[in-house]
Image (cartoon, rainbow, N blue to C red):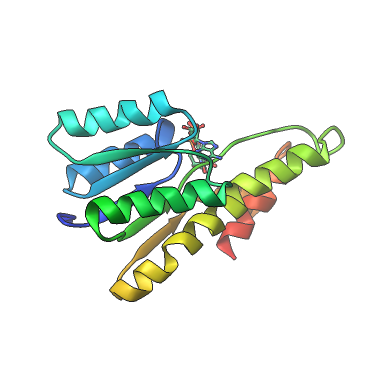
Length: 163
Ligand SMILES: NC(=O)c1ccc[n+]([C@@H]2O[C@H](COP(=O)([O-])OP(=O)(O)OC[C@H]3O[C@@H](n4cnc5c(N)ncnc54)[C@H](O)[C@@H]3O)[C@@H](O)[C@H]2O)c1
């Protein structure tokens, strides 16, 4: 798989699986937007990619923030002129039994996983349509497909991403 001249956004890629996705895409030649809440984490992954000879930029902000997501997409378009790949990876957990779970924690998890993925997908959609090319990856979970104790919020959000 050669991704030279492709531009990828990986949300929540300052650490964890997203960092691995970002490093992998960059190793295949893609220019990568490293999104995360924490500037130091995002910049650290950018530095790793650049040190390995790749191209990357940091985009700090929450996937739930429509304006921040739009600014990220605008910055990528200004720098590289296209967006080919979006990996909706950003995520959080607020595990608790449903009896103890607050609705605030339920809503927060749904907001980040489901609304965050929808907001980011919407922000690149017209660009991908105009290019007649685009790939969007949703990061779901077996907790969504089968359910898991303590994860009513997470499971609901993850199965919603399948939809
Ligand atoms: N680790 C697993 O076993 C596993 C299994 C199934 C699915 N997943 C999913 O894979 C994805 C990554 O999981 P992980 O284990 O690497 O998690 P992680 O906590 O290690 O990394 C998640 C990253 O997302 C960032 N993030 C959190 N909220 C954000 C927001 N609102 N906007 C932007 N960035 C945000 C965090 O700062 C962090 O860097 C998640 O969607 C998770 O639900 C993970």
